Length: 520
Image 1: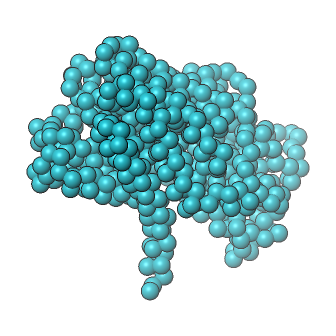
Image 2 (image 1 turned 180 degrees about the vertical axis):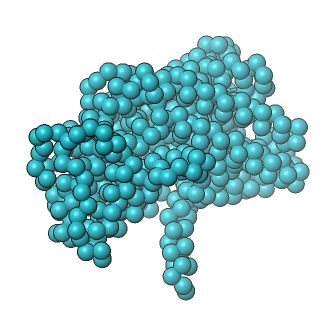
Image 3 (image 1 turned 30 degrees about the vertical axis):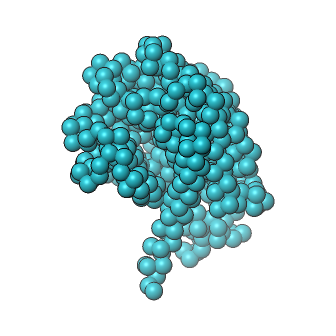
């Protein structure tokens, strides 16, 4: 077996494991709810809800510690009961129901300002409500029956997702070796918090999507609303929203066409349709690690097949579905660009500052800093897609997307760094000041290191990042400078980066959003 083959297999192993764990939880929840449906004479919508909750919860819970997972057992049943009443209200009074839906989703985003636990709770509280948009005919079964069983279905989904992921990820072992990330409070300053901005974007975008959806697509308005939610929710800046909108449109178009081609092979209520739906979801979960477009296409194809199962021909709905998805995508992108917008590059600026703050601690021989550095580098994946697309289109060099590439390349060198890397602390401090657009401190200067060492590779990466963020040398250096071994503290540098982005609110946007994992 060649080296390239080994590397390819290793790269594909993690997505396969994630997809396998997701589908194991989904199939277990499906089987359990199917037995409950037959025993309690429930509607088939209960089974669909269990599948939707399992799919979305698998992503929201991935890599979470056990205390965060326990939040789901409290939040999910309570919101599931509330979603039953919300579904009835949306059917009986569209205006009030749609407004309540938008308020619930927006509040789930707004409470992220209070910390990681509230971020997790806010994400979970949206999942049962979003499931209403996936179920055909817009709501659950009879309220008198479903209201009693809604929390049970939510607990079934929570149980199987937690059981499978705990068995695969073994979070109790990871907790012994990985130090918890240190929370950095945002600095006080002017402007509106990012959580408030994201909540406003999503809430107003959903209201517009409801209105336009009922107007243009009275029988399929949920397609518009669901797409607008996916684009708005968790969008890390204007570029990220546009990127998600494009991928959603491309993936949905491909998924709809594939489902339309396969729909003629199955009759309504054909069990083989259900099997194909799970196969499509499994492939989508595997390919999602490569591009969100695969996930969008897979979910759209699964939903199209679900409608075929319910007896609706996919052919006549093909154009309607595509039009609704495009309209919803435009609404979502417009909300992110017009309502309290912020730039994806500002998000990258803060994330890069966090990476280098952790790198400073690594060079100080902090025993837990390397894990924190690698975790911070992983977080950069959330903004890499739109930046990479902009680099491809603009052909600009150097580009802000290069920062992500450089920090990724640093990870193995940081692992192998020896005592000689401690001399890089001054250069790390210079790069952090450049990111924060500060002109004080020791200027960046490449060190004379052996080309074969990890320290030399790290220093070369720092030089590339500094070239992107360093201001032009128009001002003379400050008269008084700190010693070369002095670097800004993590709190000072992150506060400067946060204050900088908040000061630019009226021009281009706020500080980067709090870390969160959206459901879609």
